[in-house]
Figure (cartoon, one colour):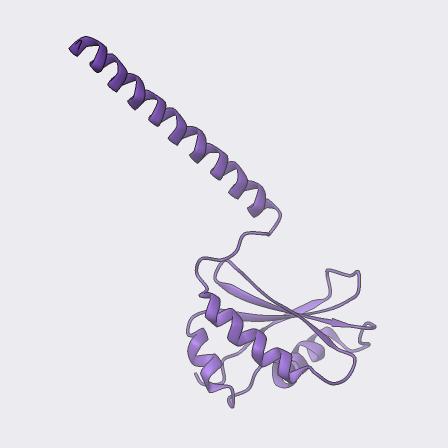
Length: 143
């Protein structure tokens, strides 16, 4: 009777080990696939911080024909996406400077910049169907 109990106990331990290994392998493959396609949500950026960024950009881009498409976190960076109807005919360096001074949140958004702390904020400007566009890093005016 003890031998039968021991065999069952060992068999259950082996089954548990196999299930754990198979589950971990599947999760790793899923994460690998997502990382290769840029779909991995960042665990380094709190969800509340992303909500604050979205709130700031949604309220600042409510008029005109530039459309705020939301922000996504990736590898500790927040990327804010803005769609424009046509490409801007401006030198890239000048356009980046414009984005930093006029589109990126200013010093009056103190709560946002305090929340970001060491998180990089980038703005991506693109036309419909063009994922390349132009991007620039917003500079924290409080430092």
